[in-house]
Image (cartoon, rainbow, N blue to C red; front, side):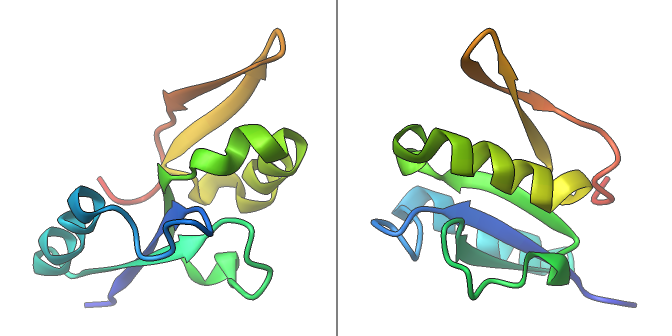
Amino acid sequence: MTTRRVALATCREIPELEDDDRLVIPALGDLGIDAVPAVWTDDAVDWASFDAVVLRSTWDYSDHRDAFLQHGIEVGNRLAVGVVEVGGELRHGDFPGHGLE
């Protein structure tokens, strides 16, 4: 069985996630999924190495709105929750097909 990798996207201020966000890591591990925190603005992160990306603590996105939207485009269909711009507002919604069903 191939281990699936999931990035838990966070911000530089909380690189290891909030305490409650970290609770999902062992739970996913029990399902054979390797979940790791990843700072969404870190150019060293290889987003293509993940099967899915889950937005967790990306609290600084409003300060970097355009970069955040571009990041969503670059991550593409690996994003477990979609981010779209509607009338100047960022909206989140579930997008099927991220491969972790």
